[in-house]
Image 1 (cartoon, rainbow, N blue to C red):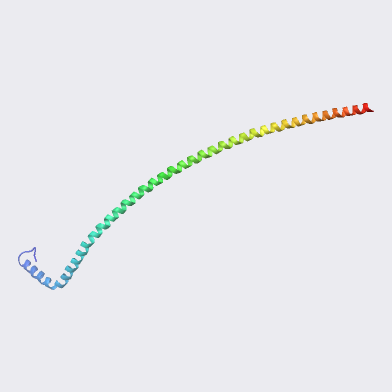
Image 2: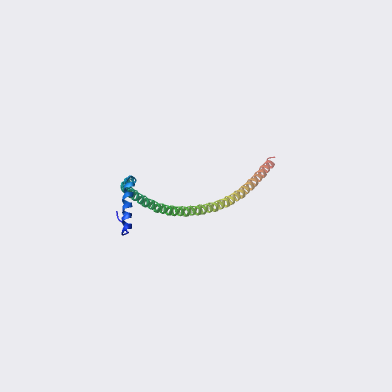
Length: 150
């Protein structure tokens, strides 16, 4: 036990500390035991805390890698989506062009069919007139033959 004082004051202080030490020994002993137990517990806990810190760092690294991968996948998805939209637009244009070509071909076919129908009607009318003319000629000859017979 030490004192920062000198003379009588130091002696009184040392005497008082000595008696207080004896009086508080039971209390101090329990405090020493508690401090030792805490010291041992903290010493045993230190490797566990270090292991936990390493595990947390590993998890943080994995999370960062997963975030990078998620970003890459999002970019790839955006690229695929853009390509999909471009391909879809090309297909729509191609189908529109084919539809226009088919419509134009149908118009041409309908015009051709209309012309052929008109031509067939004219030919039919001509054939009917020829047939009527031939029938009239035949009837006239029949009448002529009948008049000659009679």
